[in-house]
Amino acid sequence: MSLSYLIGPAIFLGLVLLSSIKQINQYQRGVRFTLGKYTGTMNPGWRLVLPVFQGYRKVDLRVKAVDVQKQEAITKDNIAVGVNAVIYYKVAEAEKAILAVEDYYYAISQLAQTTMRNAVGQVELDELLSQRDRVSENIRLVIDKASDPWGIKVDAVELKDITLAEEMKRTIAKQAEAEREKRAIIIKAEGEKASAVNMAQAAQILGQTPGALHLRTLQSLNDISSDQSNTIVFAIPLEILRAFDRLGKKENL
Image (cartoon, rainbow, N blue to C red; front, side, top):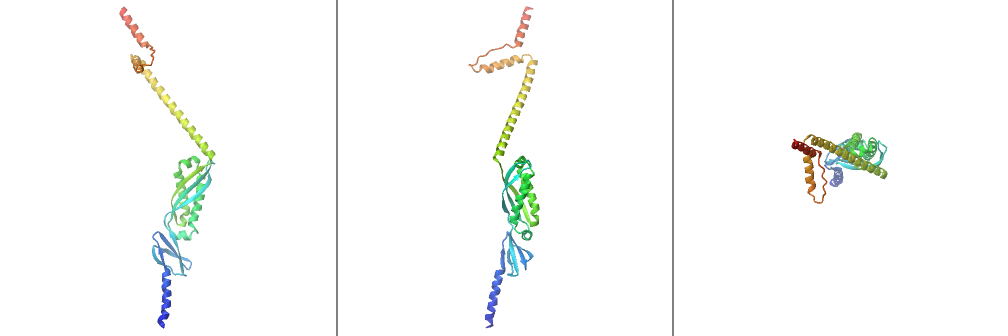
């Protein structure tokens, strides 16, 4: 008769014990509360959590990606842009993530939106487009510092897309085309300048060297004569006429 009285409590205790065993996976931590008070963080493995008296919350420590929805912002030079980003973060201290903020996932998302708008407002459009990595790093530093009391570590922030109004796209395209034309004109002018300098130096050398102009003329005739369809009008250089004149004077003597 006494044995039957013991079976019931034993079964009850067994069920309580089984229900008290909680499993914490390797990528998790368990924040335990006793009578509503924080009493420690449970590491991976099987842990005892007494029903009624104790409770716990699991916290995932793996890196999470938050897709920040598109935000309308105004750059420093008063141009409206749409920006969206992805934030990669993880929980570094499980107890802070539970005790210091109600919903850290939602809090990070809202913090990222406001920080992104503020960061865009501090740079001009050209800087935003050409130095996207630097702007992303500035956003990461601000979010990481603000979320530190929550036990959150922000690993990276990547700006996914920057959209402009159609009118602004056309303006930028015209500006780029004008810049390309400007560079082409400058390059052409520099080439003409270099060519003129070389021609002036060549003319100076030909003028100072006796017979050089005659040799240059013969070389040009040789190049032209390779095509039989060309008609050549030959102008006798002044140097040749002078040579003939000197030769005639010698014969008269």
